[in-house]
Length: 402
Ligand SMILES: Cc1ncc(COP(=O)(O)O)c(C=O)c1O
Image (cartoon, rainbow, N blue to C red):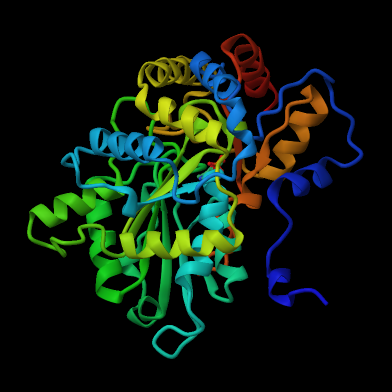
């Protein structure tokens, strides 16, 4: 009765964490939940105003491809942010998404055929990774291949080192930069090499960039930016600089609007057209007031600059309490801490038992890699989404308990 392929997907990390904590009562009922990457900073005021102003349009079925206003806002943002010539990105390159998670899942359906070069298709992803990548692979009948991204690798997967036979049957590959959970940044050079690899072996390369606006000192490069640079160097198709490549971005982290469910995919117009075609069958377009509010959010940078400053202050606090311990690295991007505590499950239980602090065991965000080892086992992931007033005492407790 049920699709047996889906049995290969373990339960999602959050129910697994709740099961782990099971009967243990929290040391403090008011402890902090540092497991869910849901920003607690204020939403931009203008977003609520626009949603209210546009409320009469909720009766309308909204367009799958987005409104012209939304398309112009997103294209303009991508071009400004990633130094792409104005007019390069248009409606053909864009797909609106109700949050990037659903798009990252559905991209498997769009890009994975039954066979790749006569073999079982493979989907490459970093390990640890954002869990929907595995969902995309498994639901589409492909083999997920978990490519370790450990401290010794600069927390980035080395796709170029994979065997030719595997690359030949690769249909889809994910890069997450800034990475969840480690916060590592893929350089422009890394991205360019990955793009050339994708084109050589004809697979689709996804850049998951939903943390691109939360960074410390180095501005994260974008995968579409790398495509344009390659085109300038004469490497690639001048008519379609984004050949084989798409990026995903979202207002969830950039603008503290996780509940608005507003994101997009952008890139190769051939892939984007197929995504939009499929979304007519099974996608959920954004309501018209959400398109309007989202367009305004993509056009405004002031709230994003403030947001970034808040995160920097919180990483200062994390550094104060955790520097020099648990392999602490001040991540160049994102809002997670990835701490090597020896045994992530034991540390998760201890923090809950002693202080009611919820974190995620790193093992739940990773799988056994090709070497048979789950690289997440020694780690916990903490997200710095709360205000400094809640965060500082909690970080102090974490340092003591661990
Ligand atoms: C790496 C990564 N990509 C994508 C998403 C999805 O975000 P949303 O669906 O809110 O756009 C998340 C959310 O936590 C994430 O961590």
